[in-house]
Image (cartoon, rainbow, N blue to C red):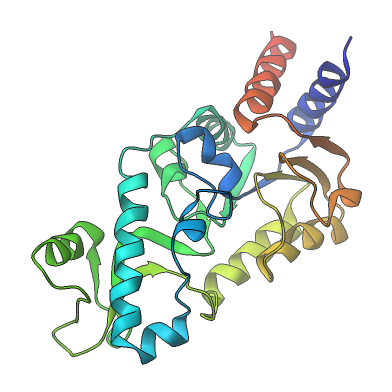
Length: 254
């Protein structure tokens, strides 16, 4: 038996025996759906300058630049569909194993796959919001304004409109962060999938699970600062790993 098979069987046993599983996902779970990792060569942040929240507030020119980048990102995400990793996590939830998904992603693919309890730490790219009155719109409505020649849309209240995502320099939503820490601290098994775990405070959530007695499984292409906490580590694609785990669990349940 090769090392992958050994790790996969151990992971399947851990998932099968756990009653409270939390999943934590980052950009790596969506690359198999055709969405590039923002930080990777050729990714959005490699092709466009990152506009901080403070700069967005202070500069009309920066808001125009922000929406040019945002349109490109939306174009990339438009045709993305959930992959096996998204679908299998949704299956774990339907089977009563997974209590929540904590995600750094803004693509909405967990919902498309059928997951119900998803904590979006960094917001969603599918809506826009007025930063003054907090009115929201489907992102498509704002794209229509952009296409009609409005380079930096403004709300009827006079407030600036931005996507309902968290920008650099903008605080994470407190309620989402509290929910994420509560979910992590209550789980028996913590699945970390596709995150570099470099961005705080989100990167500290696996540590919260570990400190409260959870076993950790990391599925990530590259090393993270918290690899030493994990009971098992996979460097293979998330869809391949989770598909094999699901198949092994089904075999053991026959």
